[in-house]
Length: 300
Image 1: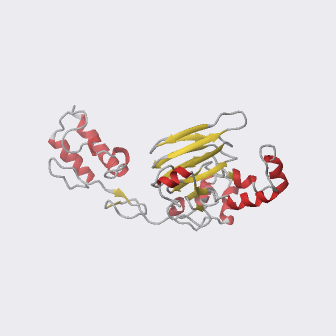
Image 2: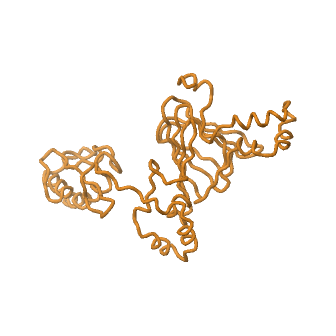
Image 3: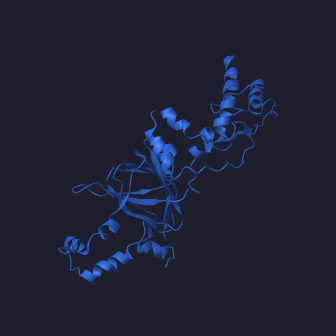
């Protein structure tokens, strides 16, 4: 039993860095007690309590029965700073830079790619303040993509990400990703999702709440819709640095008029002048839709 205080003293500085107060591994303060009783109910010796508190505050013991505030890690030099300090901005100078993108693609080894990017802040992407040419905006919200063009440090990693901010009744119109499957997790609000893999496959529909996830197979036609009057936010991960995207309706009505007429003519009467009318009505990627939601949220 004498080893317990030593273990706690050793781990305390690690947890102080990895889990700032109220966040990280131990978001619930009761998950790790440094002054009082641990989660299994066994009493912690007062000497152990003081030792742990001392480790987390660089030599300043916390009074018995209290927990010392946990420091955060400074992104600039790795030193502990006061909790709540603002993070420095991301460096967006490499975004859309074809010169550095080409160098990274042609780099012989992974370390060469890392060394081609000398600024640590270039490895950070800010979805709230993204570089130019990374957002798709519409009346129903916006999506922000981090791919090999907008975030060159992704080159060689095989991954990318999009974050969607969908307003009330907003939806991402039906689309496909030709070069990757997608995993999609909801981090705020609720989303209705649907996908169809291909001809002959049934349509899969789900309602996703916060922190629930779904998958859209590579090439599957899919959509996301916010059925509520509050903003919904989703995070989409891709197994490609360049997953690509193609909007179904926008692409279809972009074909020549005779092709569009032939494609739908067998199902209902479709006059030539209707093609231009439909083209003018097609919204941007992120649109407002579903009459019942618009009425519920009093959106006109």
